[in-house]
Image (cartoon, rainbow, N blue to C red; front, top):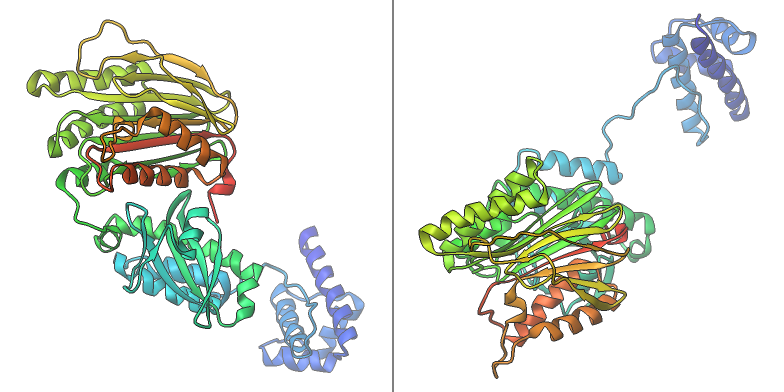
Length: 485
């Protein structure tokens, strides 16, 4: 007999003797339950194994352990006799593991619109009711997947749970609810309305943790299933989308993403008619690559130009090209288009070293990036300027700046600063800097800051944007507290 096997047998023998004697279970009871389970050894052999160091085959030892454990369970004794090998639990029938398994298996080959029903089934296994609300693409409303009353992002407690990534409680008409943020990684997708079995569940910290796990897995499934059906996408549209906007939205990465070193978040507006604005990013262990594009032209033509520029940028970046190579690839593509149609493109392409804070960028006819530090705009990055892509230039220089931990880098198109009110006054750089300073002091998550910025620009321009407006923000530092509820 090998040493590990002998050790396991001795462990079983000692535990059997200890717990059985303390529970008052005699050898006769052991043997009767053991024999009923299919054991073949006699009662004397069992006593010899337990009391005098005799030996039994592993199968027989495990049957004896099972027999004694069943007797202990009947007496509500917690300690049990170990088995010779690991005994894995069967499929869970309740609790968080069962709920998450229900989500995975329920959506394995299901169409997107089934996600609300599958989430409700998962909630049943946690002893709660669940309804799924998704945020619209403008981040104004939380809309129920199975129909019903929507909730405002700015003026409701469910909206506050979404904005601040915190679980909130509401009590209305004698009914209590938990509102749990629904996220995919760092991207906010909506909230879960959780209907508890009783009021004690509202303050149950373990239940809240389990609901946060469930919401994270459900967020992944929402993102995945949206790609092969239109139902969930339809829930999130407040108005019909133009062909140009459809093209741009297919080009965009997730609106928010993050690691332990950086959070990146972007927005394009108006979501239903955007023509030529877009953003892109790529995150690795050591680098954040960032880009923002603003195509000259209107409607689908502008979207096509943006698609060309973004494809050239991504292709060069993914093939290992440097920032300079990326700039030249976009310039070549847009230069060819300029010769054919006369269209150009403004953009900013940047790279941030996530270990040392070194920022490198080129700004092609676009408003200069901003650096926000300790609640103030401390720098307008005027370097790295060149004409818009497509226009001839003799000089392309990559500018450099060193950021400090907790700095914000803000890239934006001129649709933000050029927005005009009823009297014709532009939103302007001063107003933008003032807004960023005030909002940064609130310590809202980065996606909430730019959501509020776009709402402010819309308010300035009487609710209707006359030009595309795009913002891309990167905050350098450890912001994992913002990535999950």
